[in-house]
Amino acid sequence: MTAPFAKGFSTAYKRARSQDSPTPLASPPVLKATKIEEEEEEEEEENEQGAQVESRIPAFLHQSQSAVRAKFNDLAWKEKLRILQGRSDPSSQWVQDTSPHVMRRNRYGNVQPWEKSRIHLKVAEGKSDYINASPISLRDPRTGVETKFIATQGPKQSGLSHFWHMIWQETTDVAVIVMLTQTHDGTTEKCFQYFPLNVEAGYFKVEPLDRARDTPEGSVTFLEYHLDMDSKTEIRKLSLRFGAETKDVWHFLFSGWPDFAVPEDNNRTALLELLKLCAEKNTSPSNPRIIHCSAGVGRSGTFIALEYLLAQVESGAILDAKEGEDMIYEVVNCLREQRMLMVQMEGQYQFLYDVIRDQLKERQLQASRQHSPKLQVQANGTKAAIIDDASNAGGFFSNVKTDESQAAAVAEMKSGEGQVEESKPAGQDPGEQ
Image 1 (tube, rainbow, N blue to C red):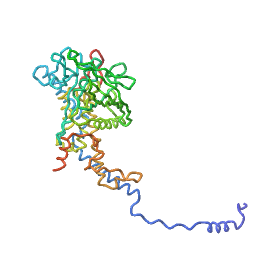
Image 2 (image 1 turned 45 degrees about the vertical axis):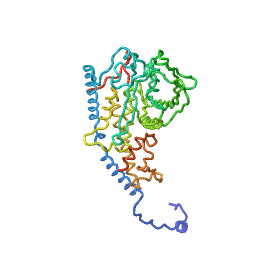
Image 3 (image 1 turned 180 degrees about the vertical axis):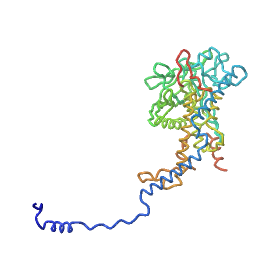
Image 4 (image 1 turned 180 degrees about the horizontal axis):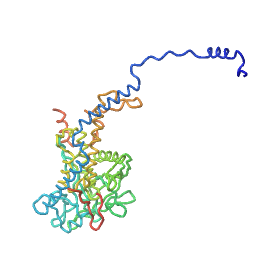
């Protein structure tokens, strides 16, 4: 058989290869710690800090869903007892006015204020001062500062003037309104269109509450509009006028809270942004913000409870919870003592536990990273922005205006049974509020 190459080819080829081949490189020095080992160390440290954070979360935020459900049912049972007491004892604080003229002003037949805890319109003697709206006050356990709200139903067409008179008499130099519902769900009205959407809408006339007293007519005028993408909120600046006096009104219409549900994913993030924005526009905690959805109890109650609880996360007061104490249960019960059905649905009640637990974990992890340079380094090699907790810069409510009493209090501190019936409009199908 003939050889595939001529004689001598193999020797010449080997000689050529030996001349062309580069000199092998010396073996690299053995490193004390490889990149993989460093990443494993960082992951281990982060897991350890995560475990420490979990151990610092109050026990009530670790409850099972069934335990949360049991507490929600207990709140519902307490409310039924209040209603029964109000019906049997005319002197009870839980009495409700069931007069025909009152019931006609309610959007829903089973949602109205406690008679001894409601807003009274300023009218002539003998005239009805009723509006379906409740004053809400929550006190900070550390500073003692009270933050005030008004929870109210979405205005009916017949109650448009009542609503704007309430805004005028109950707020100071600036009014802030947060609207957590759309005007309609399909063909069902959830809230009357009580404010001008744009310049083309012109001004809205506000009828006097008592023509016999020759009180001036009012008007609501559109000034400006901004769509805030981060909060998924339409922000309008309006002007409320009675006679020669005017008042600026900031109106926030949130689009991220669907009926029969709670904000999830991006909508939840948007809601947290809205909480900050509307607080920043207010002049002080003592100036009540007006919060409404359709009935003014479900989404409105959840919004108010969430803002209060987030402030406790921010201040660290939530970590003061004693064994057996449940701050969420307590604040919802407190709200229901001021207005029935606040945080109306079980899903809304569970939502409070989920959000507060997540926010507290995030804050605790951020604080842990301040003491761990390794965990400050992000994937791209740059250091994460760390906020000095002492200055409270970048905190959840860091830009919120405070009144003098709150500032003084903070300075002093630094120194030393079943499912609740859904709201039913008369003659209409029930709807989530």
